[in-house]
Every structure is written in C-alpha cells, then in structure tokens.
Amino acid sequence: MDSADVKAASRRAGDHPALETAARVGYAVNGVLHIVIGAIALRLAFGSKGASADQSGALGSMADNALGLVTLWVAVVAWLGLALWQVTEAITGSREASERGKAVAKAVVYLVLSWSAFTFASGSDSSSRKQTTDFTASLMKQPAGQWLVALVGLVVIGVGAYHVVKGWKKKFLQDLESHPGQWIVKAGRFGYVAKGVALAIVGGLFVLAAVRHKPSEARGLDGALHNLLGAPGGPVLLGIVAVGLIAFGVYCFGRARHADV
Image (cartoon, rainbow, N blue to C red; front, side, top):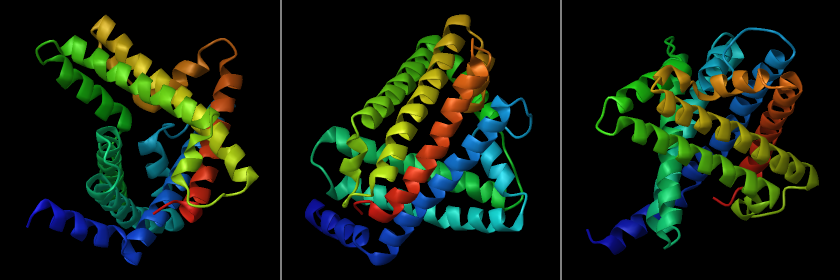
C-alpha cells in the first residue's frame, strides 16, 4: 500500500459518520471535564478544600456518582474516537508540518484522556500531580535533565501563550464550520485566555523545578491554581481563571455542534 492508498483510507475513515460523531461527543465530554475542573477551582477560591483542581480531581469526582460514571465510559470511547480522528487529520489534512504535528500532539492528549477516563471508570485512580512530579523526577535524572525540564516548561508556557492569542484574536473560530453564536464566541474567547494563563503558570512551575532542581515544584494544574491562590489578590484571580475554565467548557459544547469534522 503506497502513500496515496494510506491517505485515501485515512480520508474515508475520517469522514465516516461514526468517527465524526465520536469526535463531536469527545469535544462535548471535554467541555464537561473543564466545567468540573472550573467548579473545583471556584470552590478553592472561596476557601473550600476537596478534590484536586485538575484532570484527576475532575475524573475522580465524576466517578463518585452513577451519572458521572456513565459519562466516564462515554468519555473513554469518545476521546478514543477523537484521537483517531486527529490521526486521520495528521495524515490527510494540511500539508504544513506544524499543522500535522499539532494534530499528532492532540491525538496523544486525547489518548491519554481516554486511558485516564478508563482508569477511573474501572475503579482505579491516579493523581495528575503525582504523575507530573514523577515525570519531572525521571526527566531530571537524564543527561542534561535540568535543561530538559526547563525546556518542557518553556514549551508549556508557549502553549499557554498560544491559547491566549488564539482566544483574544478569536482564531478558534477557524476550527468551526459554522458560526456558533455570540455567547459561545464570548465563552470561547474568555475560556481560551483563562486556560492559557493557567497553562503558562504550569510551565513556569516546570522552569522553577529545573532551576531549584526539585521535581516536587512541578505540580501540574492543581499546583498552578494553588500558586495563583497564594498571589496578592489570589482568591479573585483564581475565581476569574475558574470561571474562565467553565467558559471554555461551555465553548466546547458549542464546538461539539459546530466543529469542522
């Protein structure tokens, strides 16, 4: 099978109604995840303590009730489908290497999300914060490990800055095949900027871990939000970011309906 056959097969798979539906449901479930994370962060801003304000905390909260558990199993399939759709995009989509690379990166993210959802749905659990710390510690043991950790941090900061720009300039509309309405646009703009700020702080913690040679400093999203809480005016700042994450979740529902898939 030559490259033309591979592209043709990939295009057929990407255009299949079942895969397109899975991709749309995947975006919707992604919205649920961000809304739950945002709600946890909002409670944290008001002084409450509970689940971690990150992926594991949100998935763990969903696993605690019947409806959430059903949502998790839906998420397993939907995120897997969204990952496969991103793979087809990497093969048949834009000719630009950067766009192909972006599609591959998104496929990996959704595969990880699918596996995480499966882990919680099947009764196990894991801490995103511990995974981040363990990853940082392993990376730091490698030759030039501190530089590698710092590089990871700078990349994450870059991704955060990309989200801020994408939100502020409303470039996320390019991902849609039809206009979702002004409220969804406003939610997307606010949500992308807030998520970008949170990611930039996560990246900053990686850089701090490299500088101090302390893997425990890299604490993922939950650590980033706690750091924000400790800043001057922290509860207000965290509340704004939390509402922004919820807004991003709302945008994801709009994307589920209007996405160009």
